[in-house]
Amino acid sequence: MSSYWIDSVKFDSYDSLKNDISTDVCIIGGGITGIVTAYLLSKSGYKVCILEKDKIAHQTTGNTTAKITSQHGLFYHYLTNNFSKEFAKSYLEANEQALHQIKQIIEEENINCDFEVQDNYVYTTLEDEVSKIKHEVQDVQNLGFPAEYVTDIQLPFDILAAIKFPNQAQFHPLKYVNALCKLIIKNGGSIYENSKVYDVKKNDKLYNVKTENNTVTAKYVVLACHYPIINAPGFYFLKMYQETSYLIGFTTNAPLFDGMYINTKTPIASFRTVPYNNTRMVILGGSEHKTGADMDLSDCYLNLENYAKSLFPDANILYRWNTEDCISLDKVPYIGKFSTIMPNMYVATGFKKWGMTTSHVAANIISDFIQDKENPYAETFISTRFKPIENGTEFVNMLKQTTDSLILDKFKIPKETLSEVGKDEGKIIEINGTKIGIYCDTNGKYYALKPVCTHLGCELSWNNLDKTWDCPCHGSRFSYTGKSLYAPSIKDIDLISLDITE
Image (cartoon, rainbow, N blue to C red; front, side):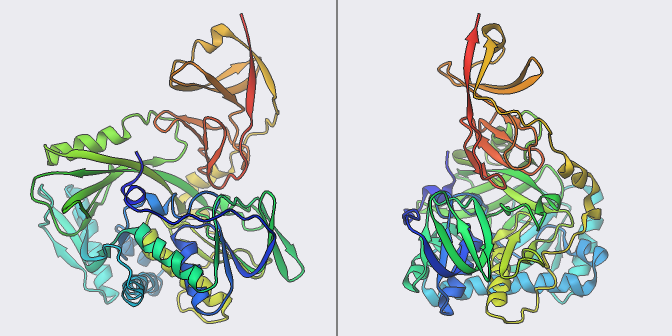
């Protein structure tokens, strides 16, 4: 199943790049961050070009919960204690400004995208989490924001405590992005789909952004592609990891709730509603895990569905989808200059699952850099920092890479060994010291590849839910045919021809 957002919008389509072109700003990535950045710059008279490797807004943006909130979990106590009160206040103000900016854009441009003002809650049913909520409420109030401590919410179960952020919002992200795309074109910008970027080269004071067959020449480049596809000199692969989260959409005849909700501790449960066929549909998220984890994922949707039916016995499951999110080691997004030695190249990543407001924070900071304007929040999200100490375990994981770079075109494999791989199953098998990733489809056809990520060579894990090969180091994902699905990988994996022996 596709996400509700993707399924419910007839999204405009755009041609692929077919010629070499020149522009002021080349934005790599057609999610909400790249689109909003292009919208702001095109309004200011800049000639902008967006290059998207697949379809606009059909990856992370099209698979989000679409909560527009500055409440990013129990986060402000963490920021206050690990950075400073001033830092936490800046983070809060930047996201609140983004929330109000979204509302302003929608009103000024007359965008119909199901925008609704809603209160947002982080709640707990666990006794040992209550004190954390109390600390969070106090710290947020000390920042000047009217957070509230409450013990009752509208979800159909009892809680012990919650922190309420009033006057947050929710919307339909693809209706919003689709409208902005039309405005970008109206403002003289250009958008190209199915135009994967393979490299960016500095050429005097300009950059050459290279797709498979063509080049975009630009003074400014923005890496808004979820995860930076360029390893050096930014080295973001040493400063982030990725998590996968799952969502379902369901209807029920039971009374529903106002507000948006998420609990404090795993297993995470995230709730919101959305207008649907003259009624409302519930979107429930959770089942998160580190991308590429060597684990059975077959019950990720089932666990959410069972939980939904425990709360709403007549729940009718209509949609299932999942998405990846980048998380920085110190939990603060990287927004700004890509590197101190590559002028006029900018990056936005590490949004920690809160991309609706953070995308606009990023668009404001980057567009201000390009226009040589001072942004009051740029220092808070400075992207060239390197602070892995907050999560040493993940830092060690990110240094992991394989040295086995053997390239295979054809591989002899005993039929008996192939029989170990059942239908609709993937497995890594070892033949004469060489590891081969094998998937057998429901018709008994085998697909073989070298199970090594094309990003930095980490060994891939089989995802038995989505039938993909996933990288546990940096979160790249590949189809069983070897196609690169998620960054930071940009190269596909070639399939291996099997010579089956008796």
